[in-house]
Length: 378
Image (cartoon, rainbow, N blue to C red; front, top):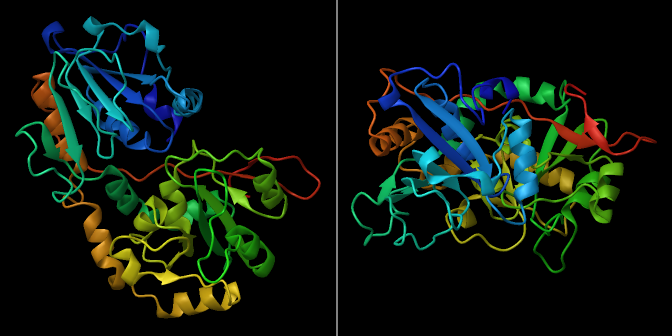
């Protein structure tokens, strides 16, 4: 996400706000945690293209509020203070991660993955959305539970042609291999499940030749591992690159040659990229358990990566990718239809399509230098 996309996201009157007064609406995007908040920014991306709509942002109260505000500011927005919101100023609320208490009384859309909450007390309708028809509760009230698709899926697929561009942005050149490893919420590195646990990141850094491989840690969505933690800082000084929570994790998956991690969002969406996915940690509870390769603790890492690349066939994980969404490529179209219905506005005479995600960046540490952001391209 880059700043130039959000120049119209103002906290006051927008002089470029077009349309008749009766057609003007304000859409409030509420983000509760950095990584799950990215689909909310995806919604803001196409809502902000309509000059009748003013898109505002706010970080929901909670332990991640400071990190969310940093992410929003990095995206070029000016997030509002939660205490300054008033009901009459908002025509629609779009929220991700969780439904905040005391949110404005406008119609509300809860994006896929939003933590359930009681909304019966709200004076305006609340609509829960789902990525797959199998996720929709069978007893859900008609019109209050809608299958819209999956923004992460659509934008990741749209980004696949930019693989080489993302690799250059991460400083991965030539024939170097990029190993993306998912970092759990506690900032650890996961574990191989065999007879004894092992530190995956430490093994990768110790066993892979540094002149041929780059290792990039990607926070599992919902986590916020800090580069200041002692264990992670040691890995950074030993050659680990770290994708900050405010960077777009989807671009890192597109750039990868191998994706390693416990069952979760990173490994599940990694099946869309066509590169080998190696599972660590507990057994997955879905089709990934039968289809993905497991990283063994008793064998060297490099031969396992080589074998996985030689034997990998993207079609083997097609059932996993197919379970992500039952509306592939239609999130923008379905979500826009839902939004404009609640806003009581006619839709623009265009067909929305998913855009590629912004180029990634990483935190790293060269020998003898303090931790910090690594410039793009190196």
